[in-house]
Length: 118
Length: 107
Image (cartoon, rainbow over all chains, first blue to last red):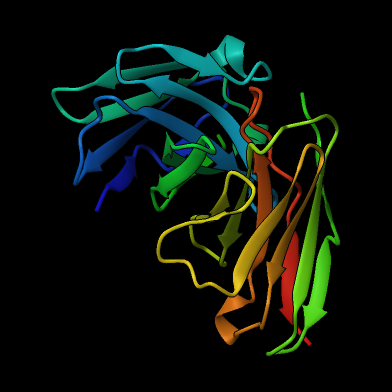
């Protein structure tokens, strides 16, 4: 069973860069697409983007200028960097595997709450 | 971006009821429509993919239908563990947008 686990700081100062890592266990990063999704407290889900194991990316245009995603196949991890953080970026950040005939988000991490505050 | 609109936004129902949640896309998404269930404080859980395919391990009381712009999630007989928020998501065109969610509450 594939499992994903997000890690990173729970608190980020305004204007700083958020760095999150998702560690995949029970399966390989290879030959799959990996995604980030976020959810502000009490609100709905926002798709951030995805990265293929080879490094190809697809970002949400609303965040594209601020995002960098990367993969480390040797560690079975992929990462998200989001710069110029503001209070509007406060959210639970999820990583997930994108897969299948419906291009569905099949496996999800438990999520990590990131708060932007000075 | 493709806008996804769910109706209703909230719904009260009783155990044993048949429940239908609708999702409408602002343009055709073919059958690239997925449904997720999210319980409080938990990650979303995939229920239905490609509009009508039941994810492995999901009870058969959940079903999905539709194509193009109009889709439906049906729960045939509500169980206590089904009270949650449900989201549709299109995966036809990036960015892969979600509906605003439908909160299913106990009557």
